[in-house]
Image (spheres, rainbow, N blue to C red):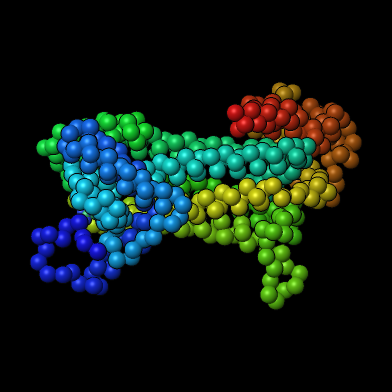
Length: 458
Ligand code: ARG
């Protein structure tokens, strides 16, 4: 296939060099964006009388034909083409003849590829934000279905205090909401149209970049042609936000993996999201969650790849920049798969209510509540901490329960104790007495659920 830069070249390029440098194998994914950009560009060239209206019309008609083939999945990519830009232009020439030679006026592949990548990125960012919202909905439904369940919460992976399971689920929803914010932030910063910067300096031809931006639905036009063709920040930002999103997936996966162990046995993951063992017939392994945790490593390395790729590059365009694509495509594809799987997994998740209930019987889970009881009776925090610590240690040592202590024994620990303190040795009470904003108090968790429901279904 004729190269876009073939004319001044003496001799043929090496076959191995061709194979090493061609990007069509992966950048064919940008075809529809390349067509969108070219349509807007051709219309602008005609409107600004840089090419005749007749030629502009021919180009537009030809591009639309190719666009239809792409939409229908019938457009075949020639692996002999250097890249998607070269290929589309050669196909266009086959359809409309020599008018196709005018399409590449007042632009270069340097600005075109940034345009294609920005359009891809922006569309995928929105797609991912919507998929994150679907995952949030699945988690919210799971929370609502199990809104009365109280479970132990952990610090240092040691039982700490009791919380509502729904409260823990709402924490996931908060994390994911921040992810959506970051992704939209990247979208907004990417939203500036680079085409027309040409190779790097702009053009002497009377173009109208604002027109192209409007045609393509961009909010703004990039201000500096040198920056326009050099900038890949929008990819780094996207990969970075996807890496953080993956970190969240991985932490959620880790919680669920732990909760599904025989030792915890809080939840049952649906069989459809598990696998068995080839040797141990009893096994039900949470492989999908483990792979979600594992694939997060790839999201980090893709971000790292871009950062390393860019760090030593002089402005402006260098061919290294071609290698930004596999990393971005892979992260986008993986994140979308992970989102769909997690949403399915939450829909099929079952809580083992009786086991969870048995795990919230340890009185130590209410130590903070007892301490705060004393604080409310005027005991200083430090002293209250000592008193309750001492009481729990002695009870544990003697195999006794606080619930069985007599009034006299209680008063021996602290005269401020009355028998009513025993009301606190109860998980329902423990969550109910929480008052602070954002706490696990059931009424406030219920309000949060309602708030999220309204927000996510808006
Ligand atoms: N395939 C190239 C890329 O992805 C397109 C831009 C080529 N520009 C150039 N000056 N060789 O970056």
